[in-house]
Image 1 (cartoon, rainbow, N blue to C red):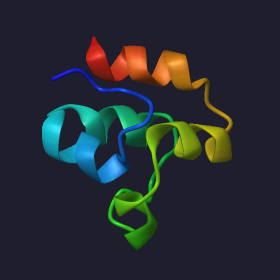
Image 2 (image 1 turned 90 degrees about the horizontal axis):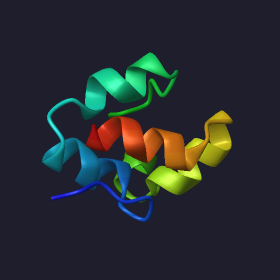
Image 3 (image 1 turned 60 degrees about the vertical axis):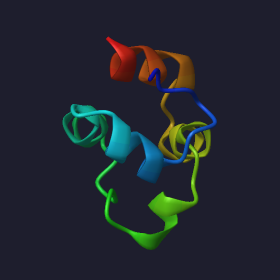
Image 4 (image 1 turned 60 degrees about the horizontal axis):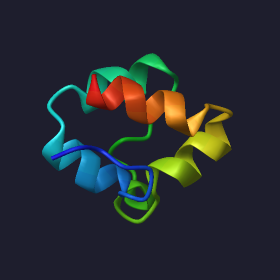
Length: 61
C-alpha cells in the first residue's frame, strides 16, 4: 500500500517498514508521541518545514 499525505504518522509507521528511518532522518523525532497517532503526514511535514510531496516520495521509494 502506498503512503499518502493524508495518512496519520501512526498508520505510516504500521505500513511502511522504512518509515522510522526516513522520518528520523528528516528531524521528526516524535514518532512515539501521542500526537503521531492523529497527526497526518501532511500536518507533520508542515510543522517541521518539510515538503510533503518530497516526504511521501521518500516513504514510497
